[in-house]
Length: 249
Ligand code: OAD
Image (cartoon, rainbow, N blue to C red; front, side, top):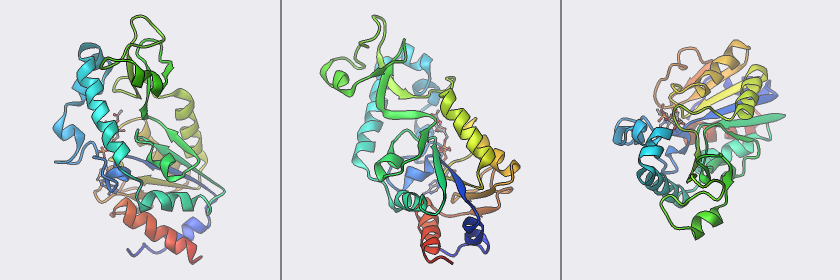
C-alpha cells in the first residue's frame, strides 16, 4: 500500500512510540473481533451474559465453557506478518511500548518484548474470591467446569481477564497513561476506540503533541483527529511501514 506523504519522515523524528492494539489486530490471525457486524463476538453473544462478574456468579459453567472455546481457538492460530512487523519496529525507536486490549497473548508469542495487557490474558486463571493466580497444572488436574479454587473454600477458577464493571490493573493503566503523555508517536491499531479507559490513550497522546497514526479499515471516533488515518488492515499497513523504514527513506 502507498503510505501518505510525511508519515515515514514523522517516524524518523520519533524516539519513543506507544502502540495501542485492539481485536482488529488479531483478526487476520483468525481471532474474531467484538463489534464487527456479522463476525464480531458481541454480534453473536450478549456481553452482559458472558463477560461480567454477575454472569459468572449466576452461570459459572456457561461462562467458563465460553472462555474455554475461545482459548482453544487462540491456541490454534498464529501471529500474522503485522505482529512481526511490530517486533521489527522495536529497532527503529528508543522505546516502543505495546498496550493491548487483547487477551490472546499473540504479541508475546510473536516476540514483542514490551507488552501491557490492559484486559488480562485468557490463558491464565485466577481465584474468583481472592484474585490470586491459579496454575494451569491445577486447572488440568482438577475436575469441574470451572474447577474449585485452591485459594479459597468458596472460590472458583475464572479467566484472568477484565470483565465489564471491573477495574483495570492500576499499575498497567497508570504506566500506559504516562507513556501516552510522553511518547513522540502513538499508533492505534484495530480498535473501535469505544471502550474506556483504553480508548482515551490516543487522544491523551494527541493532546500532548504526539503524532497519532490510526490503522483501521473502518472509521472510528479517532479517525477525524488522527494525524494519519490509514484505512487498511494491520498486515497491509504495518508491513508497508516497516518496509519503508527498513529502506531508510
Ligand atoms: P472491536 O471489535 O470493538 O473493534 C475492532 C476494530 O478492528 C473495528 O474498528 C474494526 O474495524 C477493526 N478491524 C477489523 N479487522 C481489522 C484488521 N484486519 N486490521 C485492522 N483493524 C481491523 O474491538 P476492540 O476495540 O478491541 O473488552 O474492543 C475493545 C474492548 O471491547 C475489548 O477489549 C473487549 C470488548 O468488549 C472487554 O471484554 C473488557
